[in-house]
Image (cartoon, rainbow, N blue to C red; front, side, top):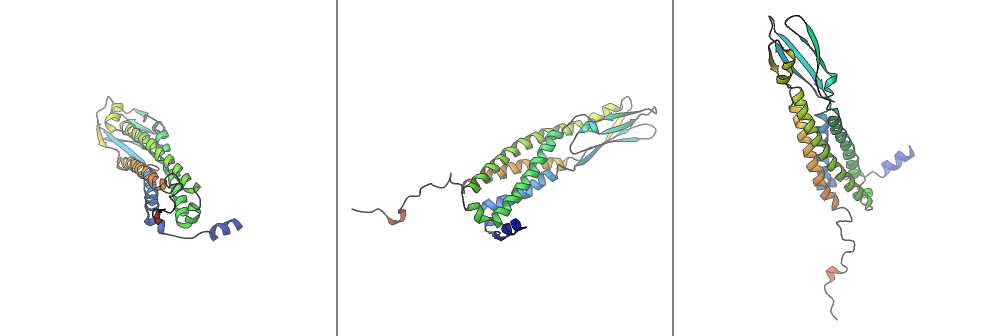
Length: 232
């Protein structure tokens, strides 16, 4: 309780950083980071094709995050009365979970730094360690967004191929099958776009944080620069 009181006593709300690129871009990162992992995590889709017997039978294969497709099975009822259970192929959970993990961690870091910018600006600027640490972590996240967005973009391409009903109807032979509906992938396509947008935001923000570090500021400003040149 005493620690909490000390923390709250040092809190001083200042919205000034929001008007500067440092704080404004961090808010954009916070928003688009949420969009990135929210459009991937919790996704549920389905693909449907029809077997043309005396009465048409719809076969629906469901799948979703984290895209361990072999865990999703669907039954094919053939025209001769037999049935076989088939599984979707491909495990793409590693790239999807990596992407979501980077998004969640980025969201937490954005929340922490926004509290620091807006409530503890004096603590952030009282030494060079705050901006330097912020620069390093932001640079790491920019690299992680590059890696996870590229990996998830490739994973999403594979998910689309594995769940394409044009490919799945091969399993219903010798019966004649027609595609009824394709899975809705717009949300997942948006997740990849949000990932690369986050890469641009986090990489660009490195410059504005860099300007707050001693690496950008001159260590020893020229003395008496405004006094002019002395004469003998």
